[in-house]
Image (cartoon, rainbow, N blue to C red; front, side, top):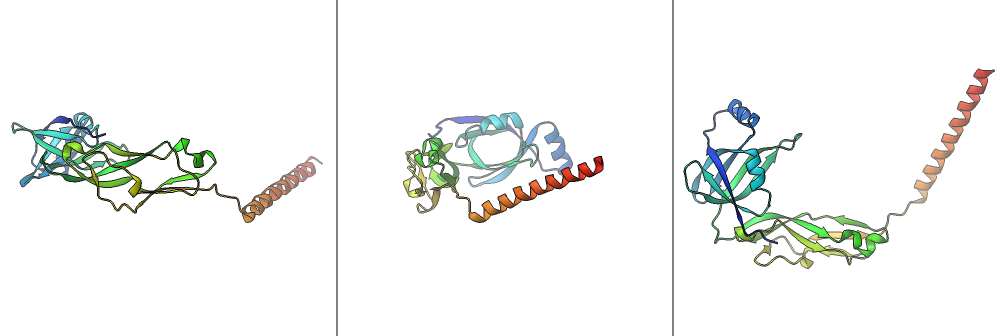
Length: 220
């Protein structure tokens, strides 16, 4: 479902001044960013990390970005960089948008009802191969995600993007023939795997016997 609301976010304009200043701001809990697009020059800024997390709570939300004393400008998330270890936000790129002009965006594709699918209940393996799609919509109509129910899938079934229904006002741009998911039969154990397992058990038993014999010899 699309999120039709906007979220306010206040940020401070900053002049890029080297990595030392950037590290200081990050230690204080700030996230560095750049806003660009809309026919205007890019502007570097810093923003409180907690406020940014709140503003980005909905993936499709339009953010009313207020830089210093300037009027708020509608923006959307373009790119978000996280620390590889802590997962904290380290940098954010925002894109100025017009609310009356469609834009393209990446949206998560979620599969629901997986545990109820007859093929899964029979032991089949459901492989979700496409997890994001490119869409076009007005900024306020971009959904947090697109969901599709797979609770009727049987073993041997495949699902392509052509079967996915987009929310009202949203156009999916990714090729409709792209494979989204497949449900395959349980993997059967091969004779070779069974033989290897059996041989491993025999070797283990032999090893146990040799160890026991060695203990008896030591005891004597």
